[in-house]
Image (cartoon, rainbow, N blue to C red):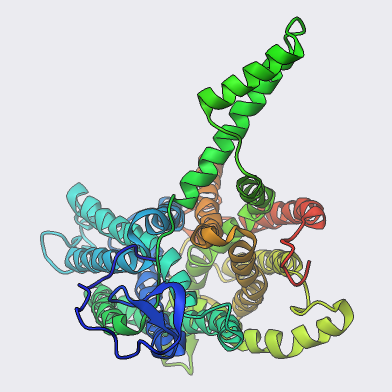
Length: 560
């Protein structure tokens, strides 16, 4: 989407001048893109590889972040969970800024490039924070607990590094998927089919990268060293930048078209408000004649700006129509936050041995989410869609909003199972006299946690992919980066809400000495929190169904 060529234009004409050129699309030199030699799967695979590497690096931090905060940084369980939620929330909100910068100024390619460089810097600082003696938190001394407390500078440096990574992924995340989809031409029948397959392979690739992250990095960070655990993502991001640059000659670039769509829609909203206010003000003046009234309205248009065109009004209406759906998905974002916080802490208290010798890292349990996604996506695509299509006559089997709602229902089931398992865990701790021995593994297998992970993974196949498709498809065509950013912002706001809930509940329950989020999980009540989220999710689903039933899809939407 860059407005200028990446490299100086050569003086000689292209040898492929007689090949079919694509309108409005250029290659890396600024020439009209030639269909056979640019884009398609060859270019898209480079971008998929880069995104898999980026997710590997991001989840290498996020999945085990609560362990680092409660370990080397010596934070309490409640403050660590709030810190993880706040960081995840910022990370998920910043893509809105990244989408604006990409669509308005830099274009997707340059935004990805600059974001990758910032990513590398952040990961480098993170690696240094766990390796250099002056930046690394001191090791615990059993004789002096004060020796365990890191300095404010060390804590500040660590948080600066991870928030630098958050800023970087804010530019990276909304652009890579859209840039990958740009490599396929919707007007070409063959490439249009490939574009649909691209999203499936994209999500499967991300889940594969996530599985590798959880299995490899969680073990390295827990049992080898945090320095190596942070250094591996740093190395991976350096290599991914090299791979991204190697594919430059094959990419297709959509040029920026005139005024930013963000600015245009903002002006449309402002103009509508101004003209509505002007009309109501004139109508209240009963003494004014019709001629005078028309004159004042015309004066208002001249003074404050013309009425938007029908196309601009339609764009604004499309964005406004998404707001109720966006709002009614926020609790799902709160539930999403638990998989990398309390689910992980819950698993850290159990017997995680396999075959009596292998100790599974707590964060690695999250790999069951990714594995269930990788397994269930083909089942959904090859079995469920054809079966439901016979009854609904909809090409996708079910509508996008039906898909999202199904995932919401499954997330409620996941929370109920999590609450029941936590009740079982607390009872086992009491029965074996382990209430005040938080470091002792409870004689309860890690497999008890697997159902809540698997159910939530299946919920993701419905809701996460459904949200992605919905916000990409239902926004105006020029705002698809914004659509993907809106989808991501659900989880950002969800993390903030989760952090707020934890802070309020912890403050209230701590007064009675029975905090729901006690550092000693055997005296905590995560089960109460899970029941609360299940109740909120059920209420959210009821309200969501009301708005989903009245939603009007785009006319071109096949399942409208």
